[in-house]
Length: 481
Image (cartoon, rainbow, N blue to C red; front, side, top):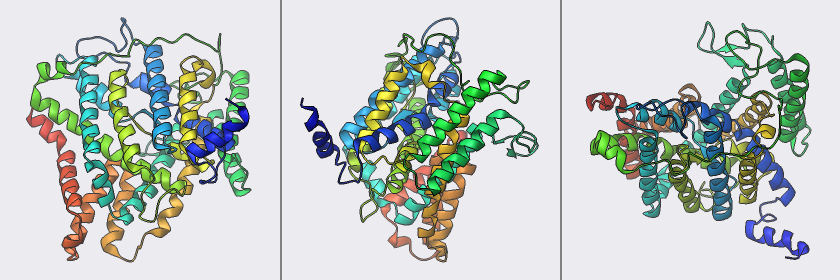
């Protein structure tokens, strides 16, 4: 291929010029998104590291197989992100979903007789169901039935949610004498907190100066400072006896930067096993609980990322909605088949969009970085969560700006918008915020005499969320909890 033709081919396929972007801008945005999401390569293996009900570990062996889970997490995230970029041309990367992996690890595989393969089989089943909902048009129909005020509230709520994630990942906010506390005993008394604050100040200052790549430069600054601090102070990992240590990753490399990955989690799933061990009804309930979280998380994330990149059309819809939802649904199947839990769209993609990403090319770059991470994990692990967290806080600010689009004097829409926004960070779940918002919206419209103006799918969805919020007593009645 003639190198001179490459830019024009990319421009034509990904519509770079049309969306005001460039290959360089997409590369930078893809890198920022990767760094904002890279924590999943550490966190997913930790969550999936325990034994199942039979005492077996995911990936095989007589002890937690963290390298294999990390490699599986990276390769599935890489392939699905590349697929999203190539098919949907949208700056939305995928990886193993937090919350979803916890359901598998702490609930499903702990049921009597259930193995990791059975747990991943439940994920594959719910993924197949969601794909069918996409192909029949129901998933997009539900999305389009959501009023614009709730879409705006979802974006704002996600902004607060990822801000809270950033603050917690950095350690600047944590638990203490109160449910949430500042720093360490109310003080900035550790070097990792200093790294976070320096990175945040640099990021925000560059944003004020409108410097391109402000978020990426903030991550780089924090990482360099962290490497220097660790080299001098040897802080080590954070723990009960070492509150001044690093959170998830230590910014230092020991030994080779390249390692040969193990992919022993791939193909570790069973669709028939769950039916044989816990019965059809239990499988339906478990698959439903996972599916609903997967189903609505993506809707909120898709709108938030599109809003950040000014990619919504006049009706408030992202481009290629059907393709985005289809690839995301396939991510659930791929995650289950890869043995690393459902893969779903990551709201951290908004960090890359805030740094210039506008097309699926950035998502392809993010996917490539994930694939490289299977071999270069020690190199990417040099970026501590304290250095990546400022990006989440900065994007939270950008998404919060949409709050002015809500008509706060109209209580029948303002109250649902308010509860949507607050329940995302305080409930620590996008799905919870959406569910509470939908239910309250239907109630407020009925109280205001506007019940006929509510789309029938909103009623159906609100009713489904009522069931979702009652799943714990339902599970107990069925002997699943």
